[in-house]
Image (cartoon, rainbow, N blue to C red; front, side, top):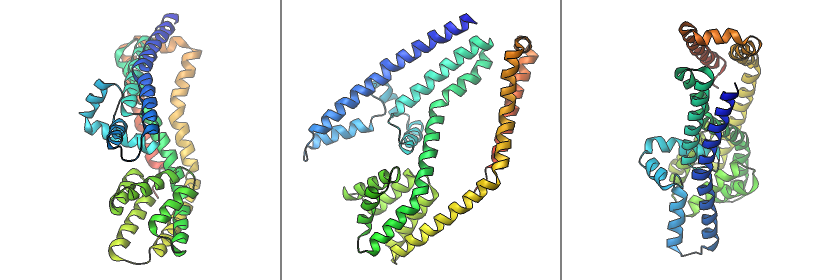
Length: 321
């Protein structure tokens, strides 16, 4: 066991050291240089603006990795969109390298602990999915908060337009008055329109950047009103009422499905917890399982069935509203 622990510490130290030297340190140096350039930038200096824009669009501060990722557009675009939606200060290169380093570490540790490369693939896959799982969790929390504040934003815009302000001014008022994350998204929408983007294009980009059904309703309503005419303040007021009623239904659904979700969590977590407790209480039981080919096959089948069962339970208790 001491050899396994020493191997884990050695591999983790090497991976973390390489990650700091080739990813984190260049990222921090480039960020510091970019901040200095932006502080010294003045209006009319187009070369500085274009240079800063190229720096912002870089996928990694390591030239080789940046060139490699730039040629893999289909892989990069979803990760880049996920980073933007989660509002995390990281580049695509950091996410990809983090997933690779964690996956290799999990594979080596799993192979050393379980004694099989095939069994080591499972902890390697789980460890490699940690960065994207964290980004998805951050995005889910941020979008949930956005959806909660969205009716207040619509109400504020409605009152502002009824008081005589324009639609663009109402967007700026939402960005100034409401908290994050809704303030940042509306500020970006407001600034893009002020910097020359057509309103329709800025709104469509807003709908793609915010994967919330209420935001898409908002974009559709505004674009429809601009093409066909009508009272926009009344349309937004009705939309805010619909979103609030949808939240009431959502809370009722969560209340009625709480028992099923709790039962599903217990059923999904009980087998791995029982296996871990049994391996601590009676280590010889699992050593026989890993030492026999039939035992390894049974473990693989059990893990696959456990994953399938957890997905089925999640599908049952996850009620769309």
